[in-house]
Length: 446
Picture 1 (tube, helix red, strand yellow):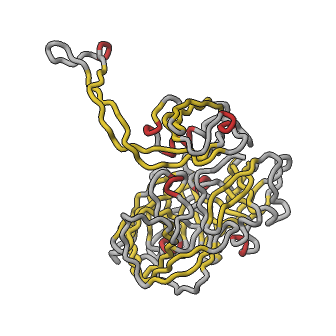
Picture 2: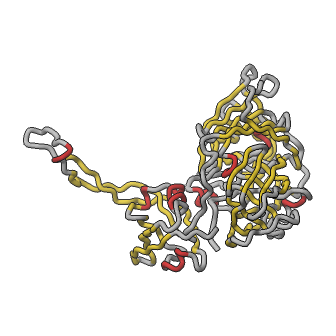
């Protein structure tokens, strides 16, 4: 079994509390009809700045959630929550409900968009540790509350969101687009698509899928939600992520094809989830799974909640391959530490003229200490190539393929572990005061 796709954050929860509806976001300037918002794309997830009662935080835009949730507040994050009381929340995973606070009548702002009377759910304990998994601080998720009053164009290539006023927006004619009706259940969007599960035949199975921009995987399928939906013969068992109610387990594999309208996507990775982990998600009886960021990023996407439809147009990533971590390593961000860095200067001749490129010599003039990112191995899958090489949970990563670890982002590291089968990976680590270099080759399992 190999550990992890890079965070598939599907937070579906049931609030054990009856809450009042809210009006949602509007344009600050009522004369405006569009608002552009830049975002960061991290592990297929859309990260936006969200201001709550005057404090700016980082949120994932997650079409798979119908409540705004905060799950990571530090001592430095000062927010005044209004009209709050304790409740319980339940989500994916097999555990018990978790304690949270519901706060009403909060002001939330995303650039030129404002929600003046918004409800927020604050989880009292950060069960997800999402910031270490992504490598940057993430405070929470927002979905339906931000999207419900607009037509929203998501351009994954340019990393731009454009919010349009529905009553003034006109869709351009697009022969290369596919338009899918949205069906809402508990304010979450579902679409009907087709999957080919049989590696021998050509039969497609109709499935109802949650549109989940907050999941970094390609697709999730719920085992036995239809007779045809069973884990293929080639798979590896894995921990897929963390939900409010515990760890989410499943089997990673591939399917021959995924069909969205007339778009056919070849050999996407697919995770098959067991019934215990998806107990709460299966309350919509005919739901069969989710499509996530690794599918959505291959399109320009228009999310149109007011008119209950989603429009897709292929972008340059449409035919990109589907990769996964082939190392068995679960690597997370470990904060910043002071790192000794050399500073250099170019040698010059006796007349203070810089030497040309052929004769230039770089000389170390001094060392400085700078705060740089560090990474640690959180877990190693048993019998994986990394496990057989001798790497262990708790190892501090010093270098990868002879490059200092701090020269990489966490996303760089994950991509390196997905590059190609048989690629050699050399990792220098520190373990209990001892430095060692271990190596392995990436191994393809599906």
